[in-house]
Length: 124
Image 1 (spheres, one colour):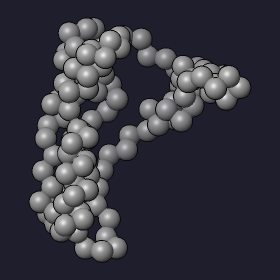
Image 2 (tube, helix red, strand yellow):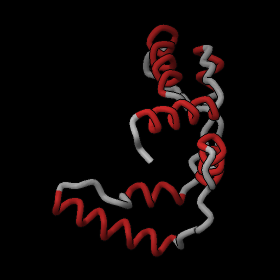
Image 3 (cartoon, rainbow, N blue to C red):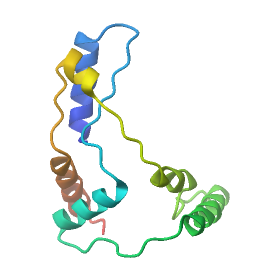
Image 4 (cartoon, one colour):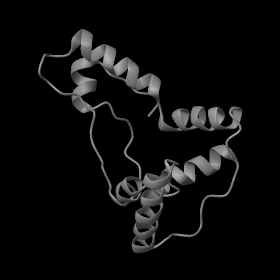
């Protein structure tokens, strides 16, 4: 989901939302594997082929996050990111669509914008 869609959703909630209510500003529910596949297609690069066992990823998260806490540098594998990557967190934004007229754009457009930004800012 694009940050622009999120910003519009917040404005819609402020203008049309019911005080005290909560609205999920989501889009299409896709797995991490599907996100990586779509990003690979958009970026014109191969998708990752190796799947790291969760126990190994967790251990890497513990070590690199611990090291980051000592050095002040970013962890290679943030422990919270490792934990979240394992979960499917599917949600629905039907209430926001119904009550706020929230209409997010396609996920692929958001992914394209992200790839373009990272490319323009020389991330690889």
